[in-house]
Image: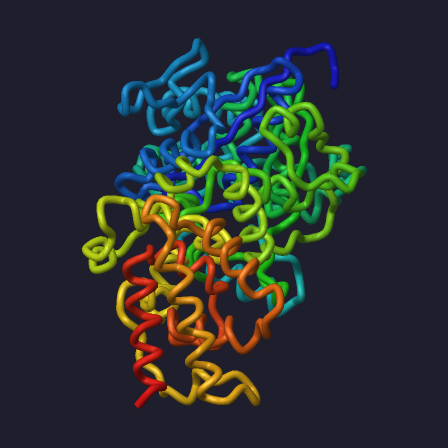
Length: 497
């Protein structure tokens, strides 16, 4: 990094809710600034008025704050209200229209931009002809050749118009990208981009250059889709006599089938992951690795460790696969680090209403929590487990065929004796001592010189009704002494008929 103060920015458009791809861009920009004692700025690019979504700005802010990617300049949340902080504002583009107009006029005066009066019909015809002639898409420069008098007359007649960038007719535009290395485009392949639309709003191309310059952005971190636009931006920097920032274009996020991760494909909004029970630190850790490699086997990083370790030079060029199984793994790892009380509080937020009715004053949840920790990746898995009957046996006496209680070749009479022995053993336990460890210790000592399978299998089935479930000590510990003995008695009676 240079001696110049590091200022990065995240500049989303409020055309929807914050996407995980946007979170990655924000995170990388944040880490670059934080590592270098710089500034991370949030700017809202809301000039696409047709796609503007009400509440979009609030969602972006709430998503960033939840993920702890908090801006220290620009658009912020103050007591849950949207505010702007800093000396380079306003930080919302729709409040900066006069600034863009000033620079557009300057470019026109210097013949670095020009008025274009072409109708939508003519532009459609140009597109069609260029496709037919196998030319790159773009404008044909027709209005570039209008005389000063023709332009003045059309303006006097209030003809609909835009302002276009006047790209050079020769040469190349080259820059050194922090991720892609040297990138070069022939200027003849670069379109005379619209800079100012007919409604007076700037396009992204003019606004982003003006804003990044005026807000003293040193490093621009953005997606690969903007690489082809960078020559236009660099030409504007040159025309306006400004020093461009350093660019780092991030690889695309891909689905597992290598298609582009899209807002239209499932839940990819950041707050969707919050609702499902992903922890912010798990999502951040996962997102950091979408394209970045620390160069070591370490996969679990605290936020502070990410700040110290992250480097844009270790971000790859290839698309990064968004693998939900890996995200689930990260979340499990962070859940395991929780204290028993913290996990209980976490999981309580996901208990279905009809399950809450069956949990007695939180005691059941306290006993159930360790089982859930072993079996879920995120809080919303609890709902699925309950709906699919995986937890039913904790709340309802199981139903099963008596013959299923038998273990391999163990006869019925012996199975009854085995279950009766467990029943008698546990009857002597005190209610307050009846937990997983106590039950396991008592039973395993009792079974030292006995056949284990012929006892533990019918015990498991009597308590859960299932061949496969958590081990019977765990189930007994959750159910408590009274319910455990009741279910063992039902099994003994069923076999005795």
